[in-house]
Length: 121
Image 1 (tube, rainbow, N blue to C red):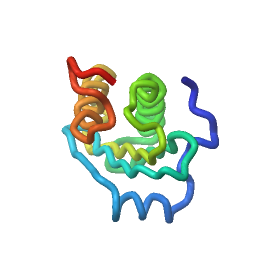
Image 2: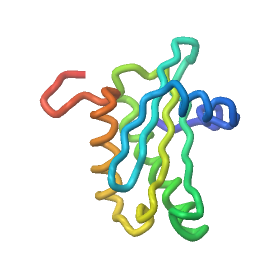
Image 3: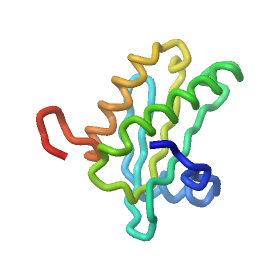
Image 4: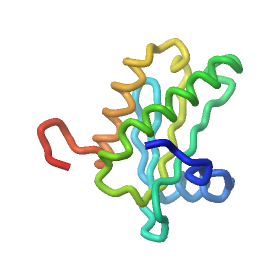
């Protein structure tokens, strides 16, 4: 599944609403926040990579990796009509893709948007 540009969260108000009323789980490298919204047609996703997470080229690499994770795992989500925000924590730029993926998937399962191991979607 390729994420179209329309699947991006761009408005500051949306980010604020997700932070205020949504659920969040923090891992070692990422913080994953989500807010279900039945009015959406598909997933809307946003990525936050601050200067604390690394230099400019590291932040671009993190956003690419996060986008790849969402593209890979979005078909497995229980409910696709939701906002999803991935926030890079300090040190995420030093992690390998496999470490980022494991942490991201762990937080997605804790939030209940991905099935747990051995659970049917």
